[in-house]
Amino acid sequence: MKKSAILLVALLALISCNKEKRVSLSNDELKTFYSVGHTMGQRMKNLSLSDEEVSAVTMGLRDAATGSKAEVNVDEFRMKIQSLFKGRIEKAAEAQKKEGESFLEKFAKEDGAVKTESGLVYKVIKEGSGAMPKATDTVEVHYEGKLIDGTVFDSSIQRGKPVTFPLNQVIKGWTEGVQKVKEGGKIRLVIPSELAYGVNGAPPKIPGGATLDFTVELLKIAKNEEKKKK
Image 1 (cartoon, rainbow, N blue to C red):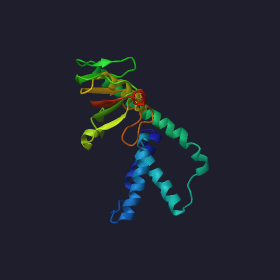
Image 2 (cartoon, rainbow, N blue to C red):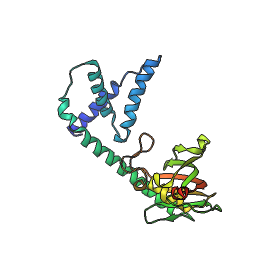
Image 3 (cartoon, one colour):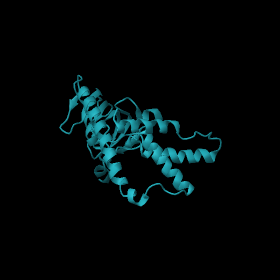
Image 4 (cartoon, one colour):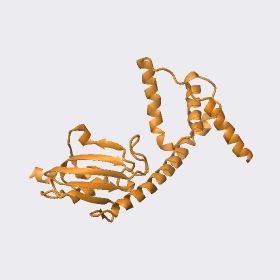
């Protein structure tokens, strides 16, 4: 085994023996501070940190919070934060994007599925009998959004309350896709990241590069703003 590999194994073993002490969250102050850490962690989820890197973050947090001397020149390495984060986020997003492309292409082969020039793939589940909306219309919908692994990240159905919004003020995949179904109908939209939240995603629920899988029921088309003014 190479020396570098031996050193890596030794470091990982040391980390595993020195994991952060778990404390009992016995009062609201401790629960609040835990929530601070959890919030910070959610924002770093897309970085795919190793145990060693999580430990390094924790060390820096502890040293700063307790007034201990920093082990590195923080001002020097602070300048590297943005480029490091950017590179990690782009790498993670690329992996998500590749998985999403496979999912999208598989769905595109289903009976009734249609792939548009933009890359959106849709399938009308229920035809409906009303008009089709325009991008300038305001629509009332029930919907459920999932990641490609089936995780539900948002659902008006679960909340039990439809949502109303201008169709041209949402992600591009929605603006295009909802125009493909008639009022009273239901449609499934598989949306590539370029037509959704892109490389950055919408943390903490939607990772960068994610392909999104929506089921949308178009309940009602409201008159667009131009018609309202007449």
